[in-house]
Amino acid sequence: MTAAKVGMTGRDTKSLTLLKQGTGTATHVRLHGVLMRIGLVIERFDPHHGGAEFWAYQHATCLARHGHEVHIVSGAASNVELPSPFCLHTFAWQECRLQRAAIVEERLKTLDLDIIHDIGLGWYCDLFQSEDGSRISQWEHKLAALPAWARPFKRNLLRYLPRYNAFRTLMERQFGDPDRIILAVSKMCADDYMRYHGVDEDRIRVVYHGVDTERFSPMGKAPLRATMRQRMGIAGDEVAFLFVGHDFARKGLATAIRAVSAISRVGHRAKLIVLGDGNRRKLPVADQRHIVFCGRVADPVSHYVAADAFVLPTFYDPCSLSVSEAAACGLPIVTTRANGASELLTCGTDGFILDDPRDDVALARYLRQLCEPATRQRMGGAARKLALRYPIERNCREIMSIYDEIMRRQTLRFPSAVSQNHLAPADAVDAMMRRAA
Image (cartoon, rainbow, N blue to C red; front, side, top):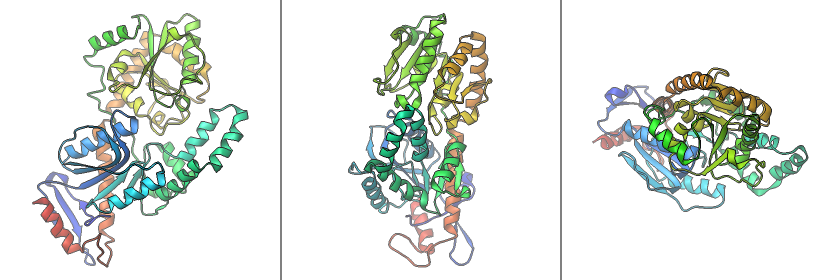
């Protein structure tokens, strides 16, 4: 996969250590330029497309800022800029997921990369991270959102349709390699990987999402808040609950609508702001005066600061990035135990946690509490403090430490034979020196 696998020793001096084959002797290669060549593999590299894509963009930016050479391998990319060094590799899009993964594998074999970090697309990588979590677990949770009579029918579709069989084949290869490290974005995901995919616990590393706490912040946003609320028709005495997500069914928008409608009927002045372009056809009929549909937005910061609290009664979310963003903006959080991000929350302190995503009565009870300004202020302040403990920089450093672990492992098991894709250790040192020049 790469010519030279090395382990980092002392980032401040930008020194790399390579264990010579058969001797255990460490050879130090001091670099004055690029530390590592890192490949990030993702279906679509577009920070405006969704949570996974935005996370990948932030991570790539952070890696480049640390001096790594970042290679993005993607089937589609928007016109975005990253700090140098940065390379973009696109491939011809294929509708079949297995064909996409195979094409990406062949493309990656042509690149001289130290680490390959796949974010859900293929199977040729050192580190695999699924921003969708376990698809099998996700399917099980989505079944729970259906009426009881519809679940057996849907389960048969999951068993026999080619689309789902392709997913199973893909997941078998993604999780099946015993030497591959699996990055889980929550303990919930880690448990799912062990339960549904047979991944050994010692192969899993849990790293929670981080957030840009300077960009997502309530500080100095009062004028923007007033402007956005006026634009959306939200009065000063109305409580604005924010929902963010494109998959309305899985994210529990119907539950949120029923709960906001319920508290409005008993006299609370509340509105639900909905960011996302999901399917509205199966949403409950509600008084449209209480719902503001904003569609897909390129920059949600203004909507976060316009809101008073965040609500996401999701049926399944590996670790919702929007929860981190809302908390950073000082919003109390209401979500469910089926959201990996709930592991970071303390119910009653920085938010509330629903046991059942369908329970609009319990959700309405929490929303009524958040209609009290003092409660919102207390919980919002606690949510901001929580977000400050998980900045994007921490997230990046924790993942870079996994990269280091992988490279240390690789130094201990260089193949004895030289192939066209692997240099002999002595040649590997020379290659690293040439790269640093």
